Length: 365
Image (cartoon, rainbow, N blue to C red; front, side):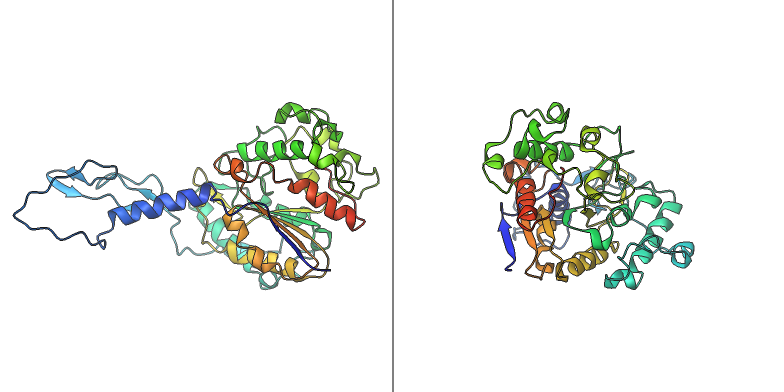
């Protein structure tokens, strides 16, 4: 069977990419290596007023420095964010301790996990946490996505960027929040798109109240192989410990454990983040681990659907090499880009249609 690769929309920068672009622009503006146009010393030059103009401090002109992607306020003023103090000594207790992924099948099939690379990065994160940094999610939740959806159970992969960076939000599943936590904007947009695929007729009471949608989606219901999530047979398999979770009781919550229990791997490319600092743990080593995970899944013969949202996730498409898989890309669901290719992408219905064609139970979104 030939691999089906569908591009729903072109790459659209997510929030992390915008921050990176702003940091690059700020660094370029303040870099002493930028060559200015030659001028004659005896010719007075008009100084335009512009954003990012060097400040005059105690009679001297000085430029702010870019530290950790945020421009410094000049001498004597602390930066708003300092990057992790690397190198740090990894926490030896983590390196010597048991593997939290033991028994899930992941360390037996993924090269970087076999080499315990994930524990090396976690040991560095815990060393930073010991320095007093506030890091999300809690240590016990860092590998929740892999524990909740074991290797053999993965049917769908949704790839995020990094965890939510607000207090009480991240709990180890990409885009998910714990029960009772207000829905972040990206998750509200995800639920809105699910409702556009299936409407309130999906058998999930209260779902329409969250999304503002009502009525069934015509393009979803017109395809004979697309089945609304609520029409999933009662015997559809769920993974423990969520086997007793019903879509009706879980739908009003932003806790996507019910997705993980059906074989949806909710994986971020970076597994930790510092409080209030999105993308702050990029480059710490998580990307190597998650790329190894996606490459291993993408090379196996067991069919899997990959949902890649936003430009960073699009870069993982080349790791999906086996023709049995389905790769769907779209814009990121963040408010900055959802209207540029996420809304209307229909990916949730497409995945269920693909699963139904293979004789598998669709996902109860």
